Amino acid sequence: MPVTFHIPGSLREFTAGHSRVEIEHSPTNLADALSALWTLYPGVRDRIATEQGQVREHINIFIGDENVRYTGGLASPVSAGSEISIVPAVSGGSENSCSALYIEKFRRILALPVTPKISDRLPEPASGVLALHPFSKGQFEI
Image (tube, rainbow, N blue to C red; front, side):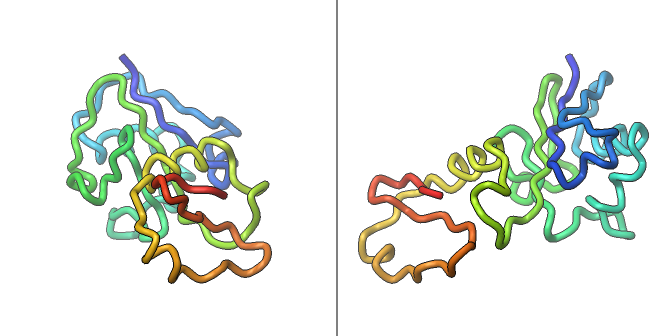
């Protein structure tokens, strides 16, 4: 069963416009999966990894719903059929500049309960800035 990479819009110029890339062989960890991606599309490597081979700070990678920064980084296990999402850091812009896939991913990841006392202290975002606002039920609004 192939491993599927979800490619963000900003990197699609390096994957011949593909939003999804399937790796047919079954890598055992994220490093092997990324290596297979880079073999198919070498231009994407420098946008994801540093010269030392580590994932860049402004790039988040998820295997399923788990951020690999908390599951072992490049050694994170990858099983057959896994879906790997490459998510660049989001800052600025507007709601229309983010795809529905990433908005939904952020909603799932950030769906943490926020108490009214904390939410009262959150500043209002500047005009034209993408911001995630907590509801009292732990959901987020964009």
